Length: 328
Image (cartoon, rainbow, N blue to C red; front, side, top):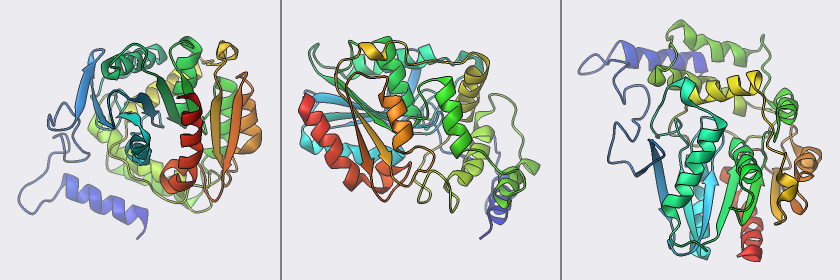
């Protein structure tokens, strides 16, 4: 069914009709799933002045592997295959970053890179059970950028890192990757579908339910047939964080960023993964990012693209496990 039709039906149900009563789009849970603040039954932790949707797998005494999801503004649901590592003796931590997924929402002007780094520090402190417990970061896309940012700021705190197709470790690389992968043809049918919903819903800054709903519809272009990132199709997602995405886009455009200034001080071997079908990334881009580290290994994952962790975990898993075991 055409996305326009699905959108119109969804909006009609959400805004105008219900079998029993009219629904208010501003009521939590009507347009998008509730956050941990609105639904206390969800697994969560309260750290650094926010409440994060979070869960763990494995023995709390084992080495920590913290999964950092993509976005900014996505969530960890499509990375849950990583929990398999708990069977191999690792303590796996997932959390929806501040303002994303099912975590607590905040005003746009409160977000910063340093705040996200502070959140990660607080997550590590929350789950670490003893000082010598090893901590590994496993970042995908934006989460891999955040991994680089954390190591760049605190190279002595992390015992190893896995980078699955980081969007770019500095503004120049991010722009290069974005030009190749995310540009929409303004005259394409995909773009028409993306913009169609705006006839029905508007959303001012910090109207999180409406903005998150709109972003969910808009994001469908990323896995359209023939996309340059080689994404096979949709992967599971609880809820987008539109305000976070806009906040970090503004930071990138207005302030710029560079997560590479101290990476050459990090002597531990790091692992880079890329999907063979992602035309926008590839070996050449992986080499550009890996070059910032003194010791790195690059591995191609065949028959998949940017969402390799969800679609081709069986191919990703042995590479990740071998790397972690080599440092554990």
